[in-house]
Image (cartoon, rainbow, N blue to C red; front, side):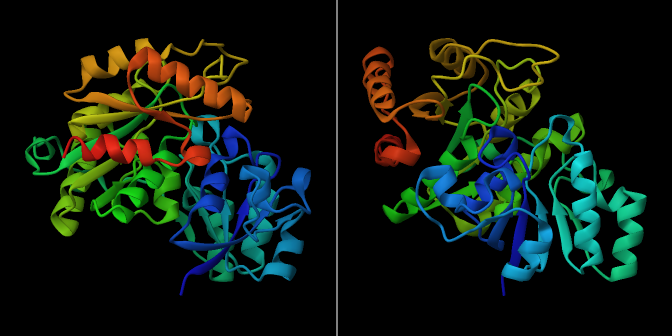
Length: 351
């Protein structure tokens, strides 16, 4: 049976920092998401907040309300913080969850199981602390072996111009649409949210020691092919190849997947990169510059552009689609508003 889970995103739901909670509300195979904790949006439906469509997932103001109304067995920390730290303001809620017998799951660099207070409480109350952003033991890690390049399938990476821009959402939607269209496809996750959502294949690539990043992801791509024999392997991107703070993830993904095709995810209304703006404000790249960089560092070509509609009206998005298709001669769409039929057609053309 799927575990009933409550997602902690207090003050962050519906924002880029709440991308783990956002992703779990939209799609989850591993957990049955029964509610979200965010006192700033309490009383609303989580799906309505994200996409204007009710999902039957209520937003509650407190853990106590969530436990009494929704009977969860697990609390998931639903934020992606800079540095991967456990938010200090979340500690009392995590403590309360453990004391009430809930398992606690997180995808942060700061691990729950390594926290002395949480570990002692979990042992006392007989609950599990699960850290999905934790690599395998060092001696078990794989190094680059040049295996993915030889796979007899199309390897497609969904990359982007920034972090928290929708790459994983687009990759999952595309994988499902390809399978529905009769093109067998397998999704490979590269971050904590995809793993939490229940991806069968993947690694938390930014948590792996540099010497092994490429090899570990390559190993999952190969395993995904060997076990499912798909026509297409869809690999989730991380960060951006032009982002000064997140460049390693994208470069490692390009080397591990050796993609023959790339889908580029972009947020046209976003002007500043997602990073700590109290430290640095770094401008977004142009789509053209990002395409040139990706095609320089990868054997594949960009075959489609997908849009994140944050801070945009439907009219603005539709006008941008027309502009990009005229400028770049590439099919362009907003996966959440338009679907991904154009991208499916572009993939079919390369099989």
